[in-house]
Length: 364
Image (cartoon, rainbow, N blue to C red):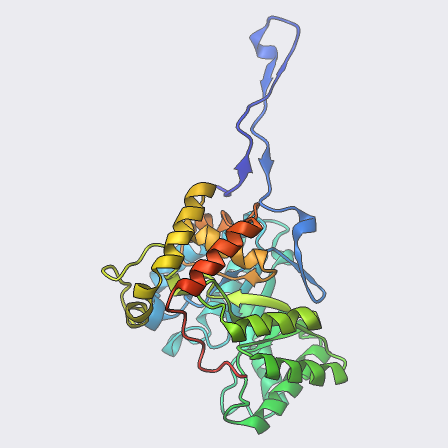
């Protein structure tokens, strides 16, 4: 069943006759979580105010993926699609070991088998191409794009993204990868191009380079949340606003630290526990503020954290692994935090002595 808002009244059409059979009951009016005019522009694309990330699909090391989860993942995808979510983010490197590329394969399968008639064509896939050391030419990058299209079973990507910059350790490779973005755009393999994990200075450089080649840079995907709103991240947001680039915020829930589910005495299993053990003890002011706002609004903590990202003009892409995740995250739509509530949360974030560790590939 789709997770939709509805009115609380049931209306009846009563005929003047006393015959009960002339009384027709109407089902409650279902309202969408957002209206078509509330979609967000990413270059030529119109996407839902929130998308979903699929990093966990195929990742056994960090997220404990097993193929037995596929049915649940497909149900989660269907629920998202039925409720108007049309942006799904993935990468050609998602999936560990022999499952490399599994996230793309599953997305392709789910789109092909979708029961949401008409909505398959509205799906916007944003995939990221890894800057592997053996991808040294633009042609190799184009080949990577074609391989992703094969796994996804589609003819054209919504957004083709460079997963990370090599400027810090292989600057010559960087230019080849930029040319690869240009080539896949010119060949019609992608409708728009974007980058991921680019700092403010490098973001300006690639924007200017692509502009000289007649290719607009439409999106920049970075870690951005109440747990990751330091000076550099805010500078990236400022650059995006100035250049007309849409910021896509990944990890809007801080890998789960902003869900209220965990504490110093209740940690997740696997490698995440090491990070949580370092950061969670310093998040009391922020988690308390999230709890207060959530209680006042009748929302959950994750819904408030995601809504803050939306209010900042970004498109958050929380990861999903289950129907429950989708149901909860959809509750971040259809309302907005007030300016005072946003300031309350931001002040609490600044008062928290710990913040998220940035991606090691993020450049200046």
